[in-house]
Picture 1 (cartoon, rainbow, N blue to C red):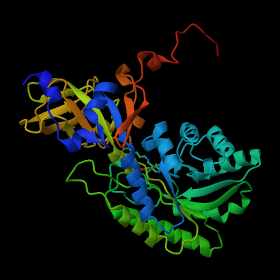
Picture 2: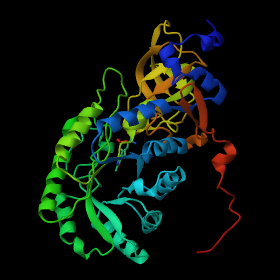
Picture 3: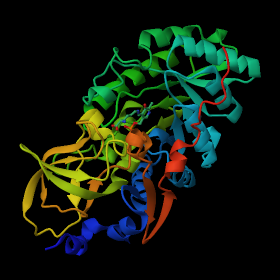
Picture 4: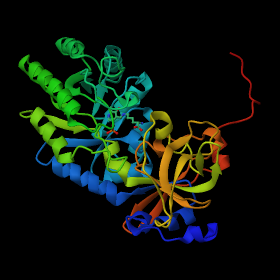
Length: 427
Ligand code: LLP
């Protein structure tokens, strides 16, 4: 079979078609690499989560960092969700996409005075405060504007999330949140905060968690603290349980927590809580809705290993390089081809630009279309133009139709903002 016929070889229907759209056709029209997201799959996750939370006074604040494409945020806005943001840029994006400010919560250890001011001016619902210094800054900036900021203390419960160290946030050695001891002091002296209403708790211990145990442990610590604070006369209006629910990156290997079990753990830990429960899922809502479409540039037979060289690289999908993360890889080719073992790599000039090592796949040829799965979260949102590779196109699928929701960046757009050094100043 020639390389040309290989392009047209039939791929199995369940993989080549997503949300009623033929992926090879999208790849031909939009080009590769290309991030593709199924709107129906995101809606299905939103519905499942809302159903699991039924009867609770709960607001789902989507963690915008997972996938901050404006069209995805618009879908989130239209579904009535809020957002969890961590920067002025995310605030701007979420407002631009139509997420109401009163459904936005602001997390992060490095909020600047300017970001806090912008968020107050926009009227965000709540600040998840991560240090005493930030609490004072919030008081100061709110006082200067004569407004009162709603604030939650982000608790670091010292719980191991049992996930990759780089995305674990709830151990006392991590930079996030404060100890219950410190938060207790914040509440004890909160009467002095004339422009901050400290009436909430927040916890987020890590990401891609595949076990309920650490989630339960963290919730129990926060719940015990809420009961203690209530007994001491403080009013707790909001408990934010963060995000972190894991997804399946490796079929047959990763076993995500069923969403009803997750909701059950929240119900159990926070039984009797009369305020509002906030959730900040990112990955769980969007990861498995996305795939990265890429083509084989060539096969290279090294002395020791066989390399499948794709036109996607670490700049398009950083997770394998940064966390050694596994993503299932599916060549959209005739499934009867014999299998081969490849190191699947990109064109970037780093050995770390590797999507998989020693992966067994159907034999591939130049031009074949390959799908890297579960790339809807932390894929495009972590992309860069490293090696001067323009940002990839992004496409939203919805029941038989598709829309390009990010045009592939042009070279001119890639250098926009850069300029020759003809305007010299002295300082
Ligand atoms: N809330 C806060 C305060 C967070 O820091 C995060 C994620 C979330 C919610 C959402 O977590 P999720 O539900 O998506 O697990 N780039 C990494 C993941 C970093 C997560 C950072 N914080 C990755 O690709 O695995």
